[in-house]
Image (tube, rainbow, N blue to C red):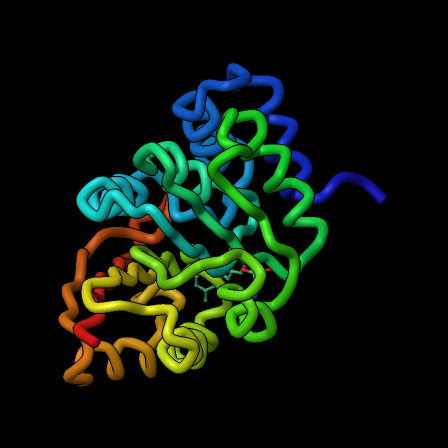
Length: 214
Ligand SMILES: Cc1ccc(Cc2cc(O)c(O)c(C(=O)NC/C=C/[C@H]3O[C@@H](n4cnc5c(N)ncnc54)[C@H](O)[C@@H]3O)c2)cc1
Ligand SMILES: [Mg+2]
């Protein structure tokens, strides 16, 4: 029983990145994924688009669905404004354990809450548990067939407000057809597609930014 890929990714961060330097943590993960082992992080090319949307929204409250190793968690948290906070949901305890260490290595543990459990179970309890009124920004990067049910649940729980920005990874590859159709057809969303590539490859992929209109 050797190590898992997330554990090897964490070791690469601890060996190559400088504690407290989130840019070096991001660079260490991208290097690991390009030169050692591909992993399903949003990556540097789509990460640049993620950065620009997060900077534009400058969210006080942010939610991420699917932490995995914490790469996009670090990308988002490093750009939060003073007082900003990111809740990230991850149901695999092994991934959550690695992500917590990656986030801590980047020195961002005070801005981030890694919550272990399934999004469908947790979303109805976020308000009472974390005192969240609504989210300014939501990043979707978990199982692709859960994107649609989970934003519908966020709507039903009143956790979206006029202007909440949703950003969804992988809308082309692996693809999220039912989610795309919904946000592009619904009168409640204003959607825009940012074309890019599947992380660390030349395959087409992209991010869909959808603003909730209430
Ligand atoms: C055909 C094909 C295969 C793979 C790819 C490549 C490719 C590229 C990508 O950027 C991808 O994001 C993916 C992808 O499958 N991502 C799924 C990501 C899951 C993470 O989220 C966690 N999780 C899953 N459901 C939940 C849930 N309810 N509540 C909380 N956490 C959840 C899991 O525990 C994982 O931490 C795949 C491209 C094409
Ligand atoms: Mg993804």
